[in-house]
Length: 481
Length: 105
Image 1 (cartoon, each protein chain N blue to C red):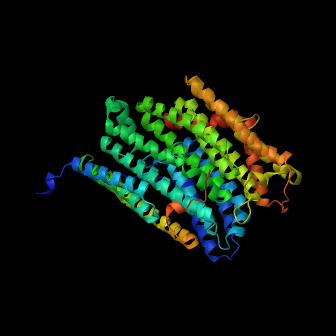
Image 2 (cartoon, each protein chain N blue to C red; image 1 turned 180 degrees about the vertical axis):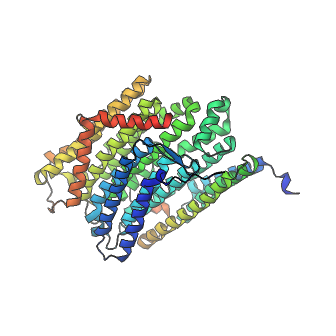
């Protein structure tokens, strides 16, 4: 047995890992204000994004077929690192305000990025589990970062318990699949499945696939496995909520897409049926419950559940175009939701309040530009042109229609009409309701920068989507070949 | 040899039982520590499966190495969980999960 250790296959991970060590060192030797650690983190993530762009086009499988560096993993690297970059920008002032010695915020964020990157580049089920756990175990403490807020700890505890159950299901499912096929290597599994025809009748195999689906459904919050989402999203510090909605979701979906494409091709029919139901129930439940919410963080939590349903619509269609539209959706959602939570971070007060719907009343009078941008983000979430959200929904639904899932597409469009109500509710509050007297603080430079990057992404993907869609197509092709 | 009478299906029954007991514990227990113990049972059920399959089916050591990694994961998870439980206890003086119900809706 020979060992192929091609370190360029994990170059972006190495950059993030080195940044983690440098940031930890600076954190240990710096004073109470931790923004320098954040600046180093920003440079590290920036270098990571540049390396991913530089490596575009390469296709390396290395470390005894444990990780692969292809366009698919690179595009998702870029997605999660953009989410991390915006989150760090937004948190620079927030962390120093909330925790006097909060440098571990950036360290945990970097290690969760590292986990996500291994998760989406894994070609072995062992690495998938390890990446998923590195990501999750770094996110749980981040949810409970503001230790003096009870809701923060409560959210962290609920997230941890349900996350651990998800891990147990995933591991058990992997053990069952391993029992049938005798390997954990995704390529070997795909080869065995493509030659064996009797697998759909194999109960153990079916149970294994079902357990893995349940485990992943917990992680991306599909109904009925979504119970932790509203509590964790509301309890978490606002920048972390944005990071969870964007990056954790993107990375977990990346792993799902990879497993569905590489492994489950011969299982296509039953898996597509399960995903059909999951997406329909998720879109409906998420949007209906979101209508009833008074707290904007909680509302966006239910909205993020609904958006996970829209991504699954892309998976249901099962074609290369459908998968690419799901990847495009993840990227557009990343820009939109991190931008929205940047603005919520600005409004959030030190005790954790400030994200009620009434806190948005009259915002347009005091911050006309910020309100306008927030309105653009809300329209993008609702799927109104010319924003990224519209193009993403258009691609996803047209992929579903092309594959013959017309009912699902119509149902999805109907639920997104419902969603228009609660997104416009925020816009209405900002523009047509009277303010209840807000202490007027200037917008911190970091938040302004993060908001403008997100706005640029939303507009770019909304007006010129075809370039990005081509990248998404290439990324899916790199998995199929 | 006594061990030779233990077959693969015995391991599967054991791990299935452990997993079910774990799920039951997670669903019924109110105490955070007891819930964590239930989760631990579920993870270890998977480990038993992995090791048993590695012995009976796979020619390599994939399953046993996987089990080693998953033991590490379980340990790390418990460390993080206990840290959060302690923080909760410091603020609320209880680790009863049913009393943790500030968040609703």
